[in-house]
Image: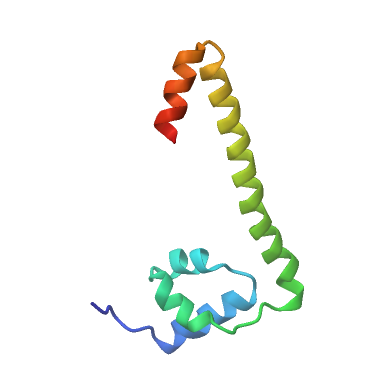
Length: 97
């Protein structure tokens, strides 16, 4: 099912914001449109050099956030299993496998 098409002003705004380093999810949320709609209009749009660092740092923050969450999860699991006996650990491992 198709929604209301983008206006020329919306398309211009999407392209302008993309050139200024906005990501697909940010544009989608900001414009209130689906990722596919936004993606169609930002394909091939180059981010301006002066905004490239800003955009790359935002992308890195996602990676850092993911790594931080993985570390937190590891610590949480260790705290849960520190008191588990060998049998309980084997049962848990077999369930995960």
